[in-house]
Structure formats: C-alpha cells, structure tokens
Image (tube, rainbow, N blue to C red; front, top):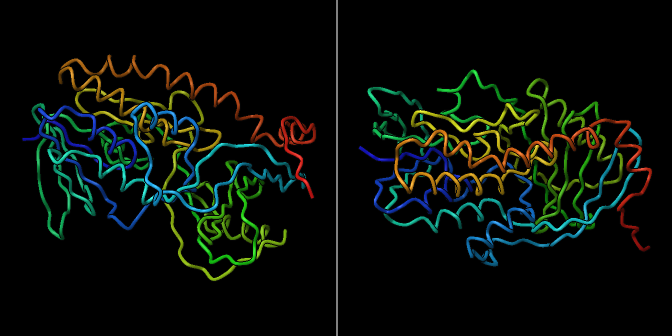
Length: 347
C-alpha cells in the first residue's frame, strides 16, 4: 500500500514527487521515456523562470537550445498584418527539461517510466491502479491518487467527467532548417483554428505547430503549412511529427482541484493559460501548493488545496479577460494596427 500515487511526471508530477516528505511511500507512473517529450514549443516563460528561481534551481546548459530569441513575430493571416513584440522566453529542449526535473526526484520515490496507467478504481477508501510496466500488467494500491497527466488525464476522466474540459489537439512537425533566419512566430487565422499556431527555430530545426479543434485537426494543420509556405518559409526535410491533447481553458469552471483523495495538478486541473497555452508555471506552482498541504497530513486536504490555489484561479481569470484581444479578429486587428508596444526592426 502506497501513501500517494502520482500519474504523470511532467513539470507538475516531477515537482510534486520532489517536494513530498520522505516519510511517505510514493509511486510515480509516467508514460514518457527518457527520449520522448511532450508536443510543445519548448519555451520557458518568465513566470516559470520565477518559480525555478524560488526553488533555487538552475538549468544545465544542455537543456538550452540555440537560438535564444527576444521577440515574437505575430502574424494575422486574416488581415495580413505582422508585428514584432518583445518577449523574455528561454528556448529549451522540452524532453531534456522534463528529464532534468525527474532527475531531482529523491530515490525514495518509486518511479515507473515508459508505463501506461490503464485503469483506476476506488474501493473502501483506497485507489487501485492497473498499469503496464515492462510489458506486464501491474496492480498497486494507494491512499491518495494525483492526476498530473495533462489534458487527457485518466484521473480526471475517471472521477470528474461532470467537470468538462475542452480538449484541443496540438500537432507539430520538425524540419531540418538551413534556409530560414531564426525566428519565433505566433500565427492567427480563424479558418485554421480559434486558438493559435506557432513556428520556432530550435538547434537548426524549424518547428511548425498549432492547437486545433479535434474535428478535422489534420486538415487544419495541412492548411496551416500551405499558408505558411506561401509567405516564403522554406520547409526542409521532415524529421518527426508529434501530437497530444491540450486543454483550452474557456472559463474558470474548467479549473478543478479534486476531492476525496483524488486530486489534480497542472494541466489536468485545467491550470493552463487560455491565451498562450503556457502551462509549465501553473504546473509547478500547483504542485508546490499541493505538496505543502500533503506534507502536513493526509487528512482534510480538499478545502485547503482548493483555497490555496485561489491565486492561480485569479491569474487564469485575468488571462481569460485578455482572450478577446487575441482571438477576436476585429479587436486583434485594431491593436496590431495601433502599433502599441511593437518593436520596429532595423533593416
């Protein structure tokens, strides 16, 4: 019998596993292996950088990639307007970042990587987990289960179906790149998606991706590539294609922390920016809060965790208020035409 079982070892699960008191018997099950990473642009936001600083964590240089980019090229394909805005992201290798966070987890935590949790059942005040590890089914029990497994969380899907969450499909492709000048772009086009798309340069690769409604996501991605090619971007040799579900937070009701011994952190809890789809900062922050609650005792967690995540919900609400200025075609066009806070590039 484990005290705590963590499903997923992204930034949320890895941070929680690292911060939990060593007096607890903890198991962590992660679908990734050391070579695979999440379908992600791989940019570390200022908020995420701040939390790493609070933890006194410094990134090793092999996590970083070239180039480090200081502006985002915002492209509105509908109005054909382009603007540059200053940004302070760190360009990184997402798989190596996740592996680094996992490497900080103490040996007292029992980790199963490259493993898939198939089923979770609640019975008599405990949780029974069935998962596949090393090609075999295993069954373990825990007093508390934590869903840190992203938008398609098995914990959320099993116990909190009534708390609906909008799931989009994130798709991106990597190409060899020797022709394009390095840049990071944010692309809007209402025909392609009501979210946004991106391109980014990373270690001599050109990455193009986007978040799309599940229906016709492949067609939408192909349309994105077609329109980007018309703008003069050169696509080299295709290296790989990757995808995952992503939470599209449309309202504060999307955020749900869980109850009765089954809790959610990070994107599984709906804690992801609705404007930028940035979730690393919220993942680490929610894990820090939950670990503080759990480390005091394993009783009466529900209300304490919910109250202490109020700050996160307020941040998300402010991001939701910002959404119309990004996704409403008319408002976005007016802001971009105004030139407010734009950078004028020297020729």
